[in-house]
Image (tube, rainbow, N blue to C red):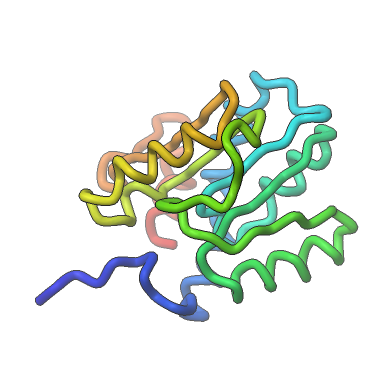
Length: 164
């Protein structure tokens, strides 16, 4: 049986969107790392943003411009509605990480979380080149093996995250 590439789906299954909106742990990890960067007045690309608006609210709260890049228009539409309700500016762009619709050095910071693990191995190098092309200097790429995720501090929270 051939494995269907996640990012070639035309729309997100409703249950996937709802599940991804509830995942808080990755936002905490991203925010902890992003605390090291001055975000005020900076433009940040979030490649493969997904439907979770937490990072958009965090970056906007730090005075930065959050630009979510998402393949699916339905995900961007849902994000735009949720952010409007919170009065957070929306600068979403529909596009593919393998061929980014931005000029060289557009972003002060490029963030990507769990995208490489969801695309075919033969497209990862092109995606990485594209992200490096549009970023100026600072990059945060988060990927991991879900099966090895653990925490001595809060194992119950990690288990809830895994089951989502």
